[in-house]
Image 1: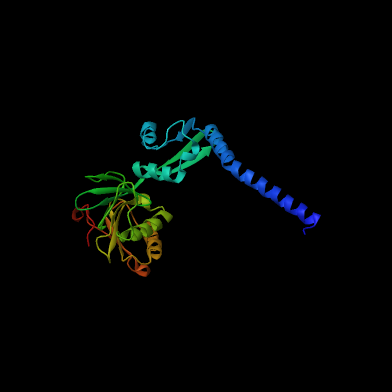
Image 2: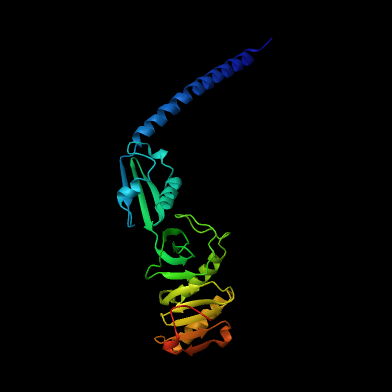
Length: 262
């Protein structure tokens, strides 16, 4: 026979199970009501775009996969940012932010053409991160021309794949060293066509021969010293293959041309 205490305990347990079942039964309805209310409260009312790029606001908004009136939570921020940057190549980055309860803010950063990579048939304009911005049929002015890169594949709006375009890393390292010494503004052409004799065109009249892609840091230090010690307004050649023995040679203007040769 069960004691009165045992009967009371079982009765309490039954009551607890019943309350738990009731709560579980109501929970989906509560969740549904909550989500519905939240969706109503967070419907997109305003989209603010900070747009210093070459694209118009209409061109940017055409890339949106949502509409005013949709819930904020239907906007996948990372996906939207990627879609904007790839479909509008001259957008370097897009920062998508929720502004609760009903606004969306998108801050754009423009991409700037840094290199004009010349192939046999076309010119690829790429930015500092080697994202392909545009394809041209001629070299533009004011952009560092790059010759001799073997471009196996590319897609406008995406960076060059370094696994397929192995000279990208060489160009990145070289340009980084030029930037550190504020020499990138003085450089008009980089020639990578000769693997063991990379060369630069500087000040429009000076050809610099670097040798291979090793020790760019030491070679640039030597180059700076030679430039500081010599006239950079006349045609000349500078050789810093061996940074211990850099050499400056003035040229006869009549014997020079616009190509980098050796």
